[in-house]
Length: 188
Image (tube, rainbow, N blue to C red; front, side, top):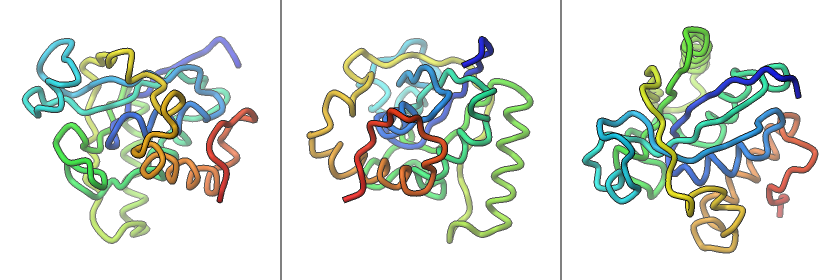
């Protein structure tokens, strides 16, 4: 890895799912689960889940753009969640589960805008993309027990039935982006 690092902040349902996927992406040196897009400083998980803060469960990635591009990080993002469902991902429902890209720079905004327009033109989904594209105002790390959740709890039912299939899909469709020490589950 080079000494150059950038950050990306994304929300696509439960942050445990995004975190588990990005921990295996080559060029990503850190993944932090947390909250973005709300109005209350440093909210707790319980307060965010109440829907009263406006935050989305999100992950903040630290990555080396010489190893993995922002575009490729967005490819993973759109691969592992449904950007067409408003305020939900599967059984996870609420504004805190919305799809959002919190851009850090004008360049990130341009990449995301172009990518979403291309996906809409190609009709990759049967419904329109509802992913928010907004500047990052603040990112608040979630409590410690949320960090590296899948890694520590892979046998829990949510991990087995929700996260593991997303990791299998990632391995099948984006293997070239994964590191050589990938801990994603193998295909059954």
